[in-house]
Length: 238
Image 1 (cartoon, rainbow, N blue to C red):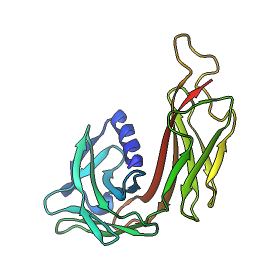
Image 2 (image 1 turned 120 degrees about the horizontal axis):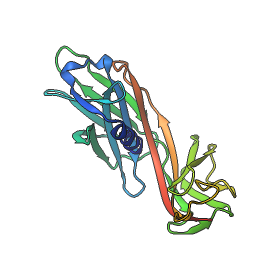
Image 3 (image 1 turned 60 degrees about the vertical axis):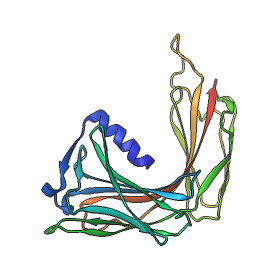
Image 4 (image 1 turned 120 degrees about the vertical axis):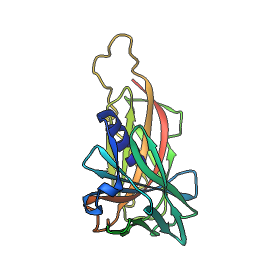
């Protein structure tokens, strides 16, 4: 979900539009299919969007649908549109076990190719235990990071973003459950602050573990991913 949300922000800023699916063949669509494991709920959020090019979304018509299934559950994704961005979302209740295969099934109208075999497996969930939300850290000190997870052969990515800092990231190899953001890695936006601006701000520390699946061959291109994320908002000070 977060990946689709970030894409949506970029497209809104650039200006985007929606076309009806009757004008588009499956072989002309770019599909973005995402499964997200929320940290605070025992279910899987599923989302799908279809585009032609970069700025034009595809809206499914009568007799067409997108369904997600896995772990003995299935859900018909519901259409939503906001600021020109069209996507389809739903939840698979109780589907969180690592290795569970999630399948997206796009049903098209007569005369066009369906895409029933987009598949991805769920990763092991992650949960940050340090730093604690609301804690203030100086950029002159290291930030210790620890997290809980079942054993995994997948790498993880730690990122940090905030209004007064430069975004950054660290790659964590499989098996790691702790790391330290080195002193000086969280950098202010400007070496010399502009008068009237603050150099202390909220910073989101985000840990992500992601798997990539196989997209149905009927699509032109795109991606299918499943990810677990844990986020803690701290305060970053000089």
